[in-house]
Length: 122
Image (tube, rainbow, N blue to C red; front, side, top):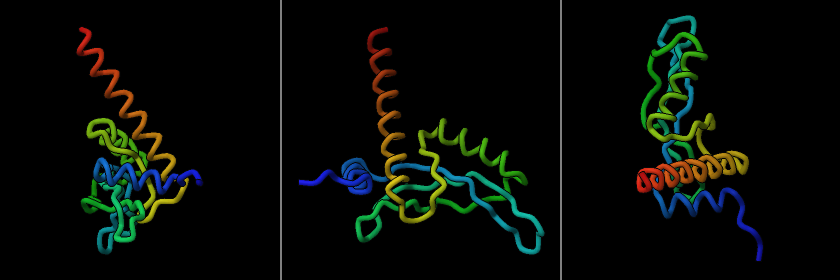
């Protein structure tokens, strides 16, 4: 019996828990504007028709920022505020992406459990 891959494990987690909220920095070129605008865009990691974990946009990039650094700060704030995983991959995830997401979800679960215990003990 072989050990499941990160992608298989993540697919199992998604089947049990549902889609995993994510966020990434994306570019939004606007018509004839010669430079891109950058924005933090909400995504969702869910299963494709073939069962592969896939990062899918939930919204379009907006003209939020003219610098990637500003958009990165926005993405970090959204991730913290909305409990989203920061993941730059678009579409099907790799083994490394799956490992990162699994770790991020595990850490978030541990933090929530600790906070719940602190509230209960207070």
